[in-house]
Image (cartoon, rainbow, N blue to C red; front, side, top):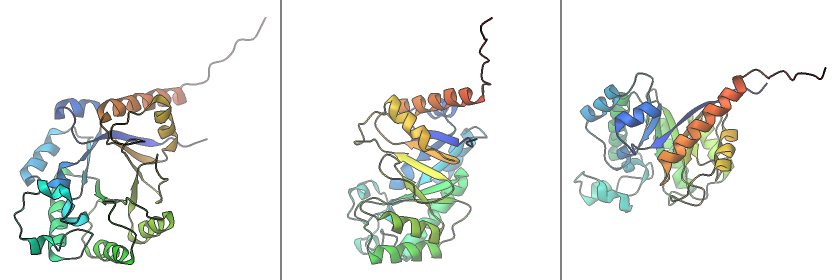
Length: 255
């Protein structure tokens, strides 16, 4: 008999009030932490406001993953000189990048987060230098108790993703409509939209997504209609679970 998946559904960011979100979902991926980390007391407030069984995951600060030429740095509030910023991004093992991870680790601990997501830009390509940086970074940092999710984008060969995830104990963050997960154990799906951010998931799409879930699977929607799509998927899972639990009805024979 097929073992039942434990599917954790949510959105990438609060798209409604926190109170309403907490009523309807049990997990969220915090996005703000990619652009600029909140104050520690803000993270503590988020965590204390959430139900006891609620789970936070969070996106790693762009100082680790993205070069300072990225347009996302426009939202960075640090007033560092150019020579300091130049030592950021691409998992460089610099004083600045290691410091950024320590700040992330503190916020993740305040949130009691289960996972931290490292989403790479497409410009982080599968070069020898990129792989050296990844190895050096993940071997150096204090990982804490967190699952570390690596979402490569661009043309990374599956065998290289698989090998690095195994070697560095990473979970492959992936859009399952674009690629199969290349790490074992926990599955972490980030749903960006089949054809782009404006895409709305259809009923057959959500059925297909349900069939891709194995064991513990996170399904975090990150498209324009993420709230409605996440609710629809949550409801589909509820119906499927109910059907799986119901005993088969006996067919009465002809007399």
